Length: 109
Image 1 (tube, rainbow, N blue to C red):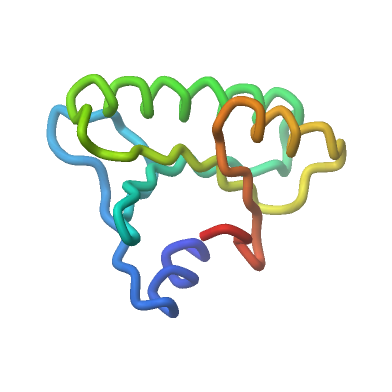
Image 2: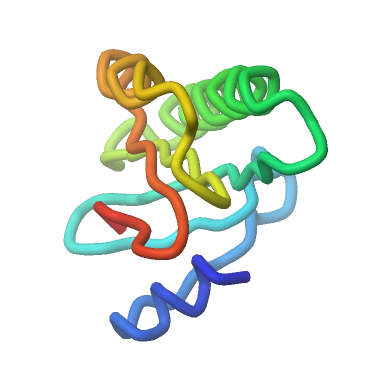
């Protein structure tokens, strides 16, 4: 996965979800933040549908983790395979507390 390679270049080790934890695609820590990511492809399906699904999933994962780890700073991340066609998704994500990023640069990660 390109995100994992990107993080490895920054010497950040990505992890999978723990047993009995939300089934996010990748997680990592940096400084005092715990990042949880959902990865969505945008080819072959409705881009809007995939982004909406990803937003719902990552908000749910973050909520579950905050409930069980209240002292951790949980940072939800939605990772897309490419920049979304509609620029509104960036502000939707920002207003929802989600870091929205995409290949190949993965800004913010």
